[in-house]
Every structure is written in C-alpha cells, then in structure tokens.
Length: 382
Ligand code: FAD
Ligand code: UDP
Image 1 (tube, helix red, strand yellow):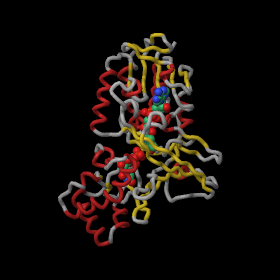
Image 2 (spheres, protein in one colour; image 1 turned 30 degrees about the horizontal axis):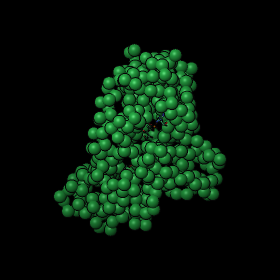
Image 3 (spheres, protein in one colour; image 1 turned 120 degrees about the horizontal axis):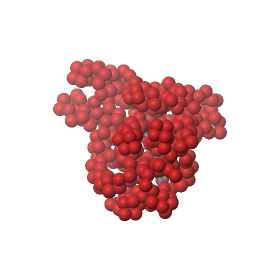
Image 4 (cartoon, helix red, strand yellow; image 1 turned 30 degrees about the vertical axis):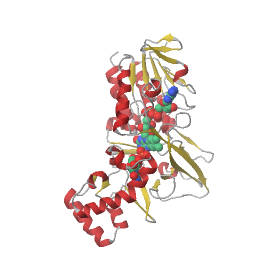
C-alpha cells in the first residue's frame, strides 16, 4: 500500500514526504511518536494568542537561495533579523562579540588599540573563532581572547554541554565567532525570517497531499521491525524504502551502546507587560542556571498586551525522561556513530537523514538541503 515509510515528522521527515508525494507521486506513510508534526521546529499559539516555539527559538536563516525559495512555497515570512545580547559584567552587550561589544566592555583606550590591531591583522568584517584567537602569539590578542573566552564562552559552554569549549569539536564555538564589525545581528545570512503564521502551518501545508498518511503518537518500534537486515511493517515484509530521521542507536537497539546527546528543559512564563527584554534573546553566560531567555514577540512581531518568555535549562540526556535536542560533536562520539552507520549499509532499503539520524549539529537549512540530496540520489529516478 505504501511505497515509502518515514520515521519522524520533523523537518527532515516532512520535507522528504512532500518531495516523494509531490515530485514522485508515490504513497508515503509517516510515523511520529509525538502528538504533533514539525519535530523541534513546532510552534503553537498560547492562551493569549502569542506564538511560541515549543522547543526553543527557531530562526530560519540561510545563504541557499533554492532552500529559501522551496520553503517560501509553503509560507510567507515575517522579515526578522535575530539580535542577541549577553549579560556580562552587569551590562547587556552584543553577541557575537564584535567591535561594539569590545567598546562596551573594555576601557576606551584599550578598546581603540585592539580595534585598530584587529582590523589591521584580520581586516574589517571578518570572523575569527575564539579557539583560534586563543592560539595567537600576540600578547594583546591573547589578552582579548582570554577575556572573551572567560566572559562569553567558558561558563555558557559548561552549562550548555557540561564540558569546556576545547573538549568539544571546534565547530561548536565556531558557530558564534568574534566578528570584526559593527553589525549586531546574530546571523549575516542573505535570507532570514520566521514563518508568518508559524512553523506548524508551514508543515501542515507541506503534508497536505493525498499521497501522504500520518500516524501520530506512535513509536516506530510498535509497527516496524528489522530482522536479518530486512524491514517488516506490521509483521509483513516491507519492500519499499524506509526513511529514518530518529536516533540511529535506537534503530539498532543500542547494539554498540548509547550515543550521547544533550537535552534541555524549557520554562515558559507569561508576563503581564508589553515587553520583557530589549531583543529576541538574552544570553546569561555567567549567571543563573539557564543559558538564555527568548521573548517570542520580538521574533514574530506580534503586538499583544502581554508577553511570553522561555528560559532554557541544559540537562543530561536520559532516554526514559527527556528529548535528545543536540548531538554532542566530539571525536569519540563520531567514532561510535560510524559503527552504527556501517550497520545501516547492510540494509539496502534504508535511508538515514536529519539531525538525529546523521548525528550532526545541523541548522534547519542544511537539513532541508540534505533531504534534497538524499531524495535525488535514492528516490527521484526510481
Ligand atoms: P527533529 O526535529 O528532531 O525531528 C525528528 C522527529 O522524529 C521528531 O518529531 C521525533 O519525535 C521523531 N522520532 C524520533 N524517534 C522516534 C521514534 N522512535 N518513533 C517515531 N518518531 C520518532 N535551526 C535553525 O536553523 N535555526 C535556529 O534558530 C534553530 N534553533 C534551535 C534551537 C534549539 C533549542 C534546538 C534544539 C534546535 C534548533 N535548531 C535551529 C535546529 C533545528 O531544530 C533542527 O535542524 C531541525 O529541527 C532538525 O529536524 P529533524 O527532522 O532532523 O529532527
Ligand atoms: N556560545 C557561548 N556563549 C554564547 C553563545 C554561544 O559559549 O553567548 C557557545 C556555546 O558553546 C554554544 C555554542 O557557542 O553551545 C553555539 O551557540 P548557538 O547560539 O549556535 O547555539 P544553539 O542556538 O544551537 O543552541
């Protein structure tokens, strides 16, 4: 009855379903264990009509024109450029650390000298990862790097990941490099925005195709089994393809042990005033147990009388208790993942895609791009 079965109705699962249904005109079943579509991008309107990202702030940003155009078929955009402040030494200053941050936190003469030297060495409008600047031999750059490392990165990273920045792949802190510019935006991508009527509406539109059937509240283990490298759907051998967007270790019954993930707890509060803070997100590297506070009205441009904020409290991941929001990028985890991937290769009809299944710290745009690639390679010409 189905040509394809997809596990997970997150971004990866929904885009894959849409491509299969619309381009290949084939039948697809999506199995999702939560009670909603959209995975971690899901949003909803609260009792005051405020649009809230249930699993933390999701700002869409990309330089890939074809991805932007593809998603624009399913939504209009609220044109939003994300701004983040960091609460440091009693002040709220621009993050990523840039020339404005430098002048706000350091004495003027020192800031001026450092600005001149930074522009001279790296030139204006360039980005330098903190762990790279830390290796500098120049004593002024070393002083600056130690300062930024201590004030911005060290304690935030210890809270978020439970380890120091240098214990993770450098790609983690490279997401937020020092920016030698006066541009206070968090991202510089060409295309940025928030779906005007919410991510949930975007996903609903994607799945609105008679070729797509959706099964919510169902763990794939209840309906799918893999025995001797063959796929069974409701006890019958399934000859179509299985697209898996969940955790690869779960798929293979934790055969080589559990892959580590990091989780979060989100605490949402309604506040009886128009705005709570100056910008979309304020980071608290050195204070409190939460890492950041996001106020959604800044992201969506809504004009309600009340406002809503979410605080993010990082947690150890436990498969019985919480959600695996982040893969933990470091060498030993990649090695363990590689063992699982070898297993996958034994099953011809299995396609692995998405942030969990590929164990990659993907932003949304790269998830969509990855789905496009896998669709083209494995499905389009069938
Ligand atoms: P998911 O959204 O995790 O979807 C996987 C789906 O599979 C889930 O719905 C899950 O319930 C389901 N599933 C898992 N196991 C099973 C099972 N056993 N049976 C059935 N179903 C199962 N990206 C950006 O570009 N910009 C941002 O601002 C941004 N902010 C983020 C903030 C936070 C706090 C987090 C955690 C992520 C953020 N991201 C952001 C990344 C973004 O969330 C991901 O790139 C995207 O959601 C990945 O989609 P996915 O489909 O691969 O994974
Ligand atoms: N980071 C930090 N201080 C900050 C912002 C980011 O130390 O003020 C580090 C931290 O390790 C974090 C990583 O940079 O996990 C990536 O930050 P990003 O904002 O991209 O995280 P995400 O939005 O994916 O949670």
